Amino acid sequence: MFSGIIADAGLIKKAEDREGGLRLTVATEVLGMDDVVLGDSIAVNGVCLTVIKVDGNDFVVDVSRETMDCTAGLDRQGAHVNLEKAMRLSDRIGGHLVSGHVDGVGEVVAFNDIGESWRLIVRAPQALAKYIAVKGSITINGVSLTVNRVAGNEFEVNLIPHTLEVTTLNELEKGARVNLEIDLIARYVERMMQAEKEQNP
Image 1 (tube, one colour):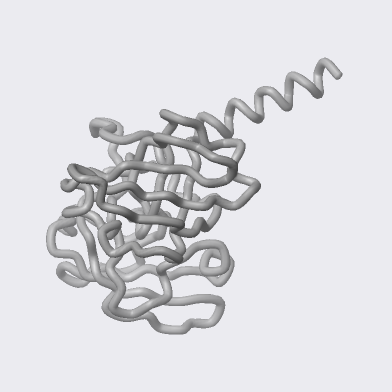
Image 2 (cartoon, one colour):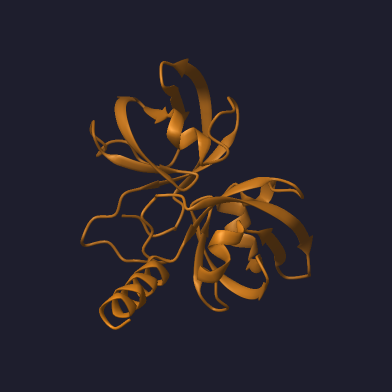
């Protein structure tokens, strides 16, 4: 599990085609790799990936073709990516509970400076719209954010300067594709309601 609080904006140093997917070498300056061992999980742009090699401040992960097909931003060498190590049970949850399993890919509709913050509007896949609520949490490229407005399948979040400084969200522009993960609680609530209907048709 993750919290959506980004520890570093890393760099995809190498993206190699492999049978069944890609192998990525990711460089990080401040994530801290001293306590990372093979098999650990790191969220890369919101996607939970398993470390298969550590080399100094670099780590290597494999991305399956299935994962590539349902996510964005992992296939470009030289791209900056948001990084977060998996939480320990003793860690403080600064954002919200994030699984690292992307629910869908959204599209940036607008990204504007509104004075002391920036307004980001994203169009989500229609199937995810019902899970997105005002004041609810959502993860965009691994970053835990609060929804300020919802209109159909479009939603709006505000980004403070600090968030833009420590994540890659400052590189977004209109038309960009972003990884979305809805709040886990929304999923559980829906499942409980479905179970109730099945038991009491």
